[in-house]
Length: 352
Ligand SMILES: [Zn+2]
Image 1 (cartoon, helix red, strand yellow):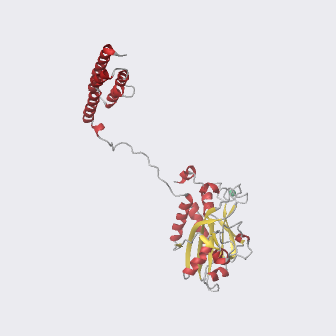
Image 2 (tube, protein in one colour; image 1 turned 135 degrees about the horizontal axis):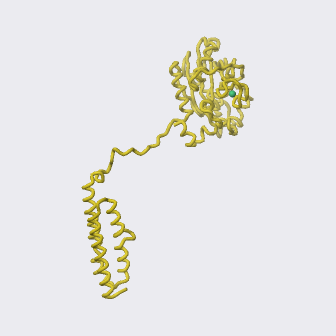
Image 3 (tube, rainbow, N blue to C red; image 1 turned 180 degrees about the horizontal axis):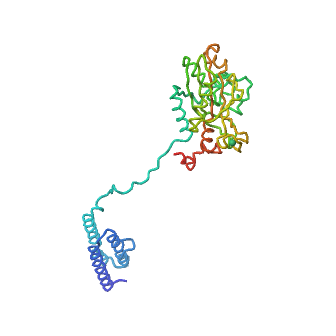
């Protein structure tokens, strides 16, 4: 298409489009209607664009003349003016924020159930005048095994059970560093820094070099309680156990003690609680016995007290050590310990 004829046709076409556009712009009563006009006339598939494509085929001098006649600027200005008029006439549109609208939901995090239980226990023991103590996660053979009365050939000293730090394997005692395999080593640190009598709890993560399954993890939380005084009757041990279980389950839970052997206690106990799934009748969770082993405990071995600088003829005490993740699992009926540290938000969201 070229020549005066084509040019005339185009100018007519443009005039029609412009007139119609200006009429519709002035007639628009809402922002939505105005947006419709904008789309039809100047949008990506609008009428003005259509005409502009035809101009490309014209001679250069015609193009210039038609370009001026196109009047896009005029249409744009009319759109802007009408938009302002509408904004001024509709207060709701002029107000950028409507405070009466419901606020968007903001997701918030929550405490991990193990940490929550740790805090609950800290509170329960703080009410009984127990201090909360924290030892280092990197410890040594001296504190974790030698002071804990483990014999030199005990299998727990093996790298199959304990994570020894690189460069320490040929060393022994204080120079042989490891990730702490239990919390109990920290009790000797505490004894060396604090004169007895004392009572304290020490929560924390411990590490074992073993394969994982539904009941075992390489890193898990323990909670240890130690009371040291000149006369600590067994009933105080039972009281510590009851305090823990009452906090976890929110009600008294029957327990029983059996003799158990651990190098750092003498005498040592295995503490069982009545299965809370079947209340002692026998089920799969308790392997039909009605009782579940929950924690070891006992009186600190004389060698442990000596390592802490305490005279075993004068001082005695009671340890209780419980697997915190395991208690959380019993509290909520969780059957796989690996879920606890999976960082799976679908799992964690249930406790937030
Ligand atoms: Zn049971």
